[in-house]
Image 1 (cartoon, rainbow, N blue to C red):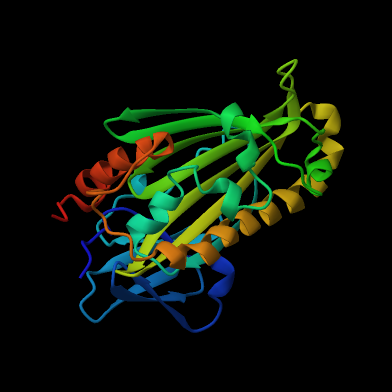
Image 2 (image 1 turned 90 degrees about the vertical axis):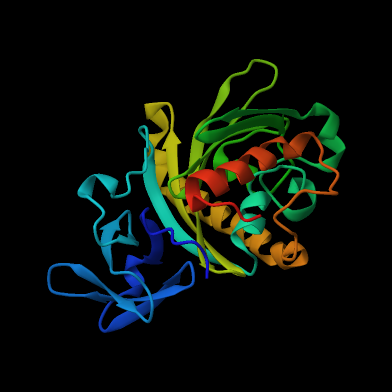
Amino acid sequence: MLPAVTRFFHPVLPSRELSKGEAVVTLAGRRYGLSRGRSEVGARALGDAPPARVCERYGYLWLGDEALPASAEPAIDDEGFEHVGCFGARFEAPLHVAFDNFSEDEHTPWVHHFLGWREADLSRLDFRSENHPDRTEVRYSAPQRPSVWTPALLLLPGDHFHNQWVTRFDPVRTVYTLHWFDPKTRRPRPVVSRFAIYFVPETAGRTWLHTFAMARLEPASLRFLMPVVRRVVPFLGRNEVGDDARWIPNVAGTPFSFEGMRLGRFDAPLVHNHHLLETLYWQASMG
């Protein structure tokens, strides 16, 4: 059995997937039945699960302990961003493996097809990370790889891609904020996107990633292009996460311990993330 994690609300199912009848979801190895009544959604514990309750936010159903107060319900900080979509992706790998994949940047040139940098631009990559008692912060900049999608984001050849993310553990989630800029003038491009990704353990060997996509367009004179941005940002996010989901089975057997592994500069956040995963999320040592 996995450690009980329902002391935090986790996104478990898009609202649109629960209509009539009951949907069964699994969180940390325990099964729950979700059903929609006339005015609210309810949760029913199945088997050896603890009683739980469900709330509905941001187009998703969130599951947590029955005794959780209203103050514990999820609140995604949008900071002026518009919510433009949400989606889930199943990763055939344990939580720590899926999580590690999104905590480092070294795999980007070989796994992803649009966002991020090319192997040839490794020497031009500016990568920095900071460890804090309750979170990890990372930011990096590099030349944006060429793509047919760059015009849809109002980018120009030679623009640089900047990704800044913060990872927290109540529950495990990382919020990525992406923007582009002219490297000569540092002038930002109009589109800023944000993806809040929640890492939800289904079983010991399977993890769901539930993503909430957001976008902002500046200056105001370009707001007429927002309908296009609303479609492009979630589309690109879904494809980037899909790249990782297809690749993750190749490393699904990676152990939790880093003993004997050679770690590089992109792996700096991983060790701290494992420590916080144990102490803040699981509240136990995996040995």
